[in-house]
Length: 462
Image (cartoon, rainbow, N blue to C red):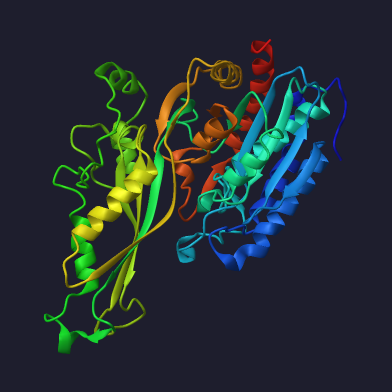
């Protein structure tokens, strides 16, 4: 039962309700809300209804599961005084698929706690981080310490490109009007060196299909006389980068913003051990574009990676088949000034142009989003800095992230709002991978820091 003692501080309320806050998150993590797989449609909708109930229990007003052409958006708000600043909180309740399940140490949707970490799909991305905002809101409301207005926009399609969010935002511009957007869907350098993300990469995601003969063939009878689509696809993919790991697509780098030496020197001040980075990943050496450090490759340089490749026979045992088709999924992470639509077109034209006549090629764009850079001189950034200093005892370091949150540019374009990316994840969280986890310390400290952000933001906006 929720406490409502005004004399209780927000921090005391958080401490008194830690166990309940954790159990609620565990319950949410048990719902396999995988938006990419239609087999989980019922679970995604169940997660939306679960969130609605928790918003109502926390004390939010106007709570609604808003239908879209895809999965619903949950809206909720608390307007305590229209003259006060308003913060729009964005997050998502959908998660990545758990495949390959055999590589999980425990079932992906049966959360367990080991070494002070919650292991489950979505624990960090983004259920754990999103739910911190619900609990911070509850704590502030219960202790009569909410200093400004809050609106929530929690969607169920972020992991598949947020296809219907733009339509929802455009149709609800007045409803979503605010002074800023607050998002926790990014990571920090470490718990010892907290950071705030000030830049995100854009994304162009495509699937390619290479077709050779009109049917699968016997590799002995036809091998050597007909193009093998898998071999051909591998050769085509290999040609997309040169020996310096630069992407070979004509025009790919034309609009890339090159940082100055001074800006690169500022980036280099962030605490980062390349040796530790390699050791954590169990690789002997790092790799990437020549002429740039690992931090620069991750944060300010565009990339191209194969996310999946398949074709032919992949079952147990052997089958001597020359396949008719081969497939690959390819993602390109983009930097400021690169438009994902232009890059997708450049990729499509180039990939088709390098295909030999012995095969046919089809490129199917999946989803994409624009890069984003957020200001460090805003009231929101200064308030977040003050909140980290109070909660963590350290000033956060501004960093650029290699991930993509396409809706950041969407909020700016449609609502005119700049986003603050105040994430609490760590690299060791292994998001999108087997054994994803989220630290209990980060979960609780995140709730505390978010509460402090509102205090400082409301004070600084006066």
